[in-house]
Structure formats: structure tokens, C-alpha cells
Length: 67
Image (cartoon, rainbow, N blue to C red):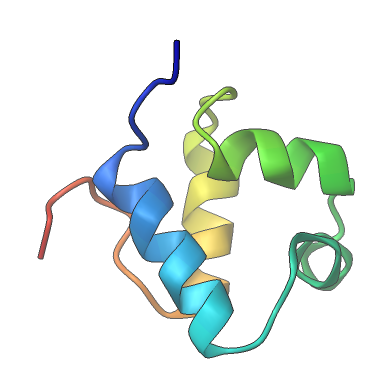
């Protein structure tokens, strides 16, 4: 069964597409391992500090609000 992505996960993925950045590029830029970033982006790992760094890099809000 597929689980729904949180609004933040969706915002992050859309921002990555708009900036033409893949998970590996994002991980390298932030100094994280690619599997870890993938896990955070897909909601499997909950890490507020990583989420904040990813949000700051992508220039998006780190909240789960749809706005």
C-alpha cells in the first residue's frame, strides 16, 4: 500500500524539479548521503534539522502547511 506524501515532501520535490536538482545533487550540496536525503524527502525519516536545511536550500517553508 502506498502512503501519501506530506505537503512538505511534495513542496520539496516540486522545488527540486523547478531548480533541476536531483537527490544526489541536493545531498552533495548539503553534505548528506543520498539515501538519507531520499529518506527525508519521502517521509521515511523524520529529522527536523535536515528538513530545515533542505528547506533553506530550496527556499521553501519547512512546515506542512499546503501554502
